Image 1 (cartoon, rainbow, N blue to C red):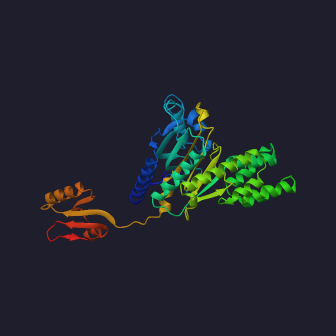
Image 2: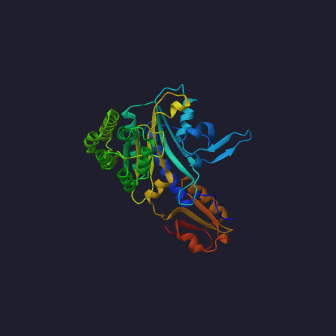
Image 3: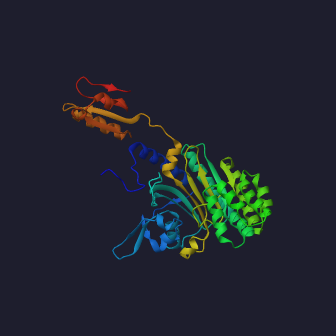
Length: 389
């Protein structure tokens, strides 16, 4: 009778409060960059948002409405906002700077610690196809994380165009092999990638080049090596975009948080250019992610490019690792004779912005335990007094 659906979690008071604080900080920072918050329905039509979402079909929560239409609980926020941008906001002047905060739902097959419902806070910059847009979004992501108090984190930046052009040049139209290698990179299984490359029926030179791809990680110094390894014009174009992005991020003074990885692959298959992921020590999972998705909006019949990011709010709270400290509330203990005085005193404190517990002494099993964790208690019962000041 106490079981919950697979992947669902209860949010207890302390964690709820920490989420609220982190959400407030993120929201204020995003607003300071000129973004406007909006919301979309939790349920969307499968034929519109469900099919264009990058979430696997087996991870969608599906249900039927009374007319027999298949609905989905929104698996991400990007696709619904793209729907709104292509319909209700299509005549608004671009670029659009939109932001969101809300729960998303992705079904889990097993209870492996992955949530089926989690909260995302993020942004979408729609109608800006330049490196300036990419830089703004990444700089805003860094600043948002910093303003929550998170200091130790890294944003890993890659370019999906480089990887795909790289494989296309070396493997031609061998889609099965390309998909296998991309899957190893996505799962960061570099041992498996090496073994798969060694087993290929290609020349030793091509195998060597494929293996060198794994070394394209680091700071700005990787641009020369990635340029020398580039096999075609599309690879060169991707490197130039990354170099331009790095110069802009230096101007935002956030380059110290940036790490480049030309092996980076996302599970979101609508990314078309720059993409990035954020990590923090001891978290064990991705903190945030984002990138450029220039083909999603055309699927809603809107010819516009876009880029954005999403922060996993629960993981951010875990990364902040705030310890539960003393309860900030004030406790007022009353009896029948002091009840009126207690109500007046509680009202006074609340008008001052304080959180107050007004509690009749008859309903307190252990007065000492009641007082122990509160920042301050006022005992208005006979013989009582202030405690924990």
